[in-house]
Amino acid sequence: MLTADRLLTPLEEIPGGAVIVEDGRITAVGRREAMTAPPGAREIHARGMTAVPGFVDAHIHGAGGRDVMEATAAALSQVTQKVAQHGTTSLVATTITASAEVTSRSLEGIARFVRENSVSGEHGGTSAEILGIHLEGPFLSPQQRGVHPPEWLAEPTREGLKKLLAAADGCAKILTIAPELPGALECVAAARAAGLVVALGHTNATYAEAEAAVDRGARHAVHIFNAMRPFSHRETGVLGAALTDPRMTAEVIADGVHVDGPAIRLLLAAKGFNSVLLVSDATAATGMPDGNYLLGNLEVSVARGVSRNSEGRLAGSTLTLDRAVRNIVALGAPLNAAVQMATLNPARLLGMEGRKGALIPGADADIVLLDSELRVTGVMTRGVGL
Image 1 (tube, rainbow, N blue to C red):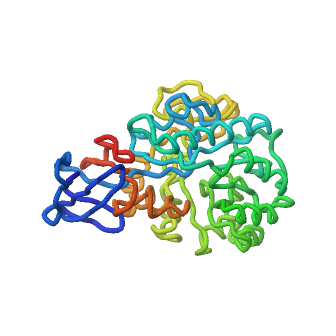
Image 2 (cartoon, rainbow, N blue to C red):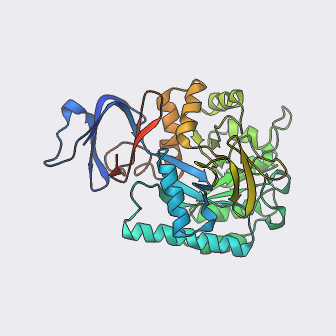
Image 3 (cartoon, rainbow, N blue to C red):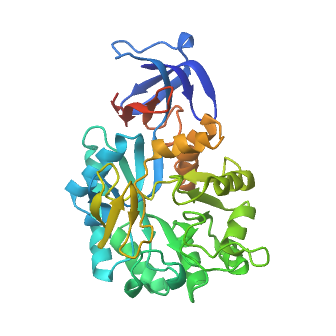
């Protein structure tokens, strides 16, 4: 049984709260005086701490010097262990546009890692769980490609999607797509039929083109404000759809580099705390010194914690979700709302809100302890740790 000065579930604040964990799952949550620890249970008293759900990162490429597209057990284990140190207990491994051969090999390797860890129940001690795969590419706009290699971008087709899904072997969770591309709307419908979350990103879409995709089932905006047609009062583009359509959620990279503070405040005012997700878009450089790293097969250089390619374009980030939470709080968001954006909201996007992103009975025992400065002081992943 874990006790803390307060719990943020995150929808409820419980002063003097306690969480009972058995066999890797939460079995009870409430006030300490109303709880009875099971016989022989280990008791952890986190005085001065706030207990929150483990963070869920729906957009992450790497950490700890390794990239998820390496797709080896060693690389993926390093990523999951490094981000767990910063409170991320679940993630969606995110690819970058590459050749069909490289992409297929990466998807197969990630899927194999997910399956093997799911079957064995082993997760290398305190490490994040890979919930699935986020396909960021190749169905992206050449005009808004960011650092995605132009030679490997492709127009969306049902057959192309089918090949990606086959390589991912049931592990694909999110598809990022530019809805203005020829064939995109048919691909959106096919991805939804396959159970994927369809996200709009790296897109030069007009408002009408974005809304057409939403009508087909797209529900999410990828790293909002970045790699999108700029907002104009006469043609609001995909930003207009993302900010005003209640069917859409939006993720933001709150590292102080990708999006300026006033733009984040605008996002929160337009969407509310229930519809915004904090993501890292982290690369292999996360948790590492400045230097040169790989993003997929791309070389990137990191200086003062900012990752760029040889042309000077932003190339992912070195953000961790604990820092994103601190940054959002510094912009004026309440702590419980900031925690919700890093936990429950991404879990809802993935359809996993009963298992991830909340301190509720039946959920995985993914718990993070924060001190008064919102620094991570302890992490439990599926009942292991702290």
